[in-house]
Image (cartoon, rainbow, N blue to C red):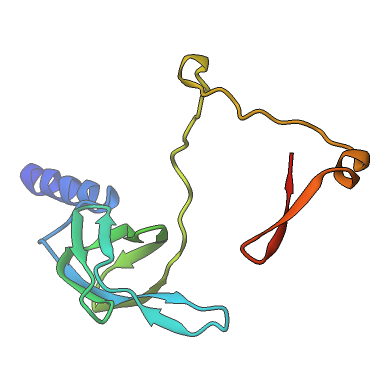
Length: 153
């Protein structure tokens, strides 16, 4: 009787902590899209898909922007889809049956920056410049060059 109570206690503790019992798995499938200004979806091929939860699983969308992940252990997951400059995240629960979803990619957060510093030792001497007044323009020589009038100094 003591052994039965210990087994029951361990089983209840495993269930309460969210640990898998008997290796039950589900399936997650869906599509990754990006929408134009009118809201029309376009599929995103080769987007990277990752599931993070009781297991870490990754895949990629096919040429139609679809993905399917079989044998996903039951539990709560953060699913993420990423394509260059775009990302989508969502929390899902995998249990009995299949999880079907559509991930709408949005502009991703910029996570890097560039700092530009001027170095006087590498600088070039600026081109000479001069301010001229209207009097200089009136008394300067104008000539035609390739069908246009140019000012000679």
